[in-house]
Length: 59
Image 1: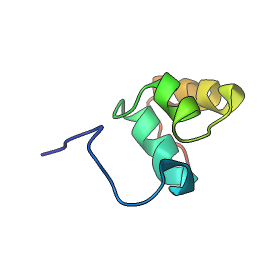
Image 2 (image 1 turned 90 degrees about the vertical axis):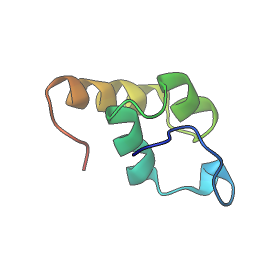
Image 3 (image 1 turned 180 degrees about the horizontal axis):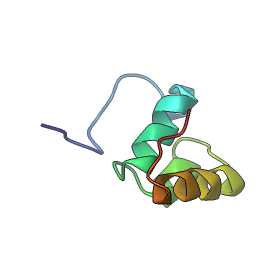
């Protein structure tokens, strides 16, 4: 069972970037949240979304 968008521990911007990218690829967080809350650049958000469309997960 998954509960995306729930409260967490610590500052969102300090979260492991790989975990943020995986959550974005899996649709657990939006592109807007990935940028605004977690600090992913627009270019990286687009790259992760392209990877996800190919059926892959970011490394």
